[in-house]
Amino acid sequence: MTKGEKQQPCGQNSSPGNNQLLSGLSFDQDRGELLLNSTRYLLIRPETVMTFQREAEAAFGDAVGHILFQGGYRGGRLSAETFGRGDGRQGEEIARFMAEMGTQLGWGKLRISRCSPDDRILQVEVENSVFARGYGTAAQPVCHLIRGVFAGVAEVMFQSPVEGKEETCLARGDRCCRFSYEASAARVTTGPA
Image (cartoon, rainbow, N blue to C red):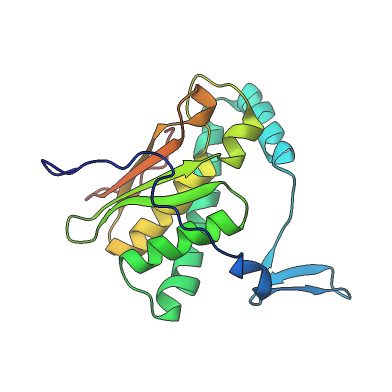
């Protein structure tokens, strides 16, 4: 943040609206595919994903955060390229579109709290994160998928590698999950939050 710039509290400036994403969904009965504008999606309970994460962490440790991050990163990058830049969106429009898409997917209330394409900085807040709620109480941030998604989004926006971290997490008892991304000379950050 620049001097004198205030960070918005979680959930502020959120806009109500209808779920536009639902109108783009279709189901192919013969193939058993749920599609969003011809891209296949999967509906799955958050408890399923977060139980997988907890069990995998117990067995394999911090490597699991890296793996989940990478999955989110790939999906976020592909979506930002397809639904963002591919549909003519640029810069901040890509981030705002992806945050709205995350909200409409039921991941929580996502909002862009800061976006500066010139400074190559992106901050995302998630109120009521489905991943943090599904995980339960944790000592460390747990929303590796979201962290990865917006790392992919930020790389598309900035056309540069980024470093990203989850600064606060609902699972730790924070009011919301807050993610920060900055362009860097290094490869995208893939390790734990």
